[in-house]
Image: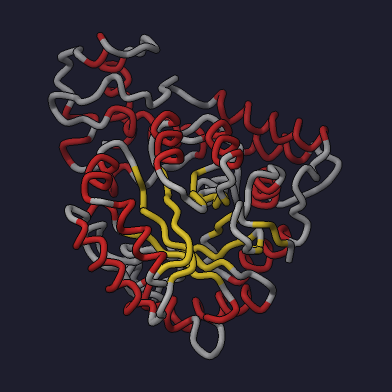
Length: 380
């Protein structure tokens, strides 16, 4: 296992972290029913092979974002018998449930009990975006984090992020964070924080945790045939997941890459990749091959939407950027199950009444009304 310094902290972290959001389930597919026997086997195997960063969060393996999930209690079980002392534990404050300073303390104290630990090594303010950020500031997030560090309930404070670059830089500069967590992979260099945000945070001395390095598994396994053909032309042969992970690890600014592993073959494969995950280790030719694969993916994009949000809010409630993102994913990867899972009924394309207000604000000049009809035809 290779290790990297975690930003301005004095911690040394394994380049591969175990993400506990997609653990194996018992038959039936209920997300709250974790196959604990198998999941503990996977976590223990990874730790025994050198992984020392375990990531969970309040809602993981639950029924929704408003309630506590089963991931944190599972992690408590998995880290018994000496395993807690071998790892750095990360979990997250459920920001969307925060209204007051008291809420912050209550949730942190509850999480300490759920995790059966006296202190959380890396505590993140979860999923900061432009809707949540003003409320968090008003409720006293700075004072809360300072006090939690001072009284020992947490060791380091960080945040995870799901919004635009400008807000990301604002959040980075607002507090003396130790680390942050962003989505990053070879298709998302300009998505949310992106490469510019990665470099900005690194220059400020933050340790950087990467989530979705495989885009929820879409960059692993069975790639579209033309994309796979591009990788097959390379002199070195790698699994699709290995190509994607190695691309992220090639960036020296990256501290640790999270992988939501739910089968032993995934753990073994990712550990093998992590053993060779030196920064700046990909050759020019290898980077070109990944660039070719990326170009093929990009050519499959049907709607040139940058998710800038200028079309929003829709008077009818349609989530236009998300509709287009899922539509593009369908054409890039051949499947997209999230549309009917994550979009509320009023957010779907079929609610468009063709008022055209969105098109008057779109800087890309997209024929939004016509494209939403295409989205509806595919998913509804």
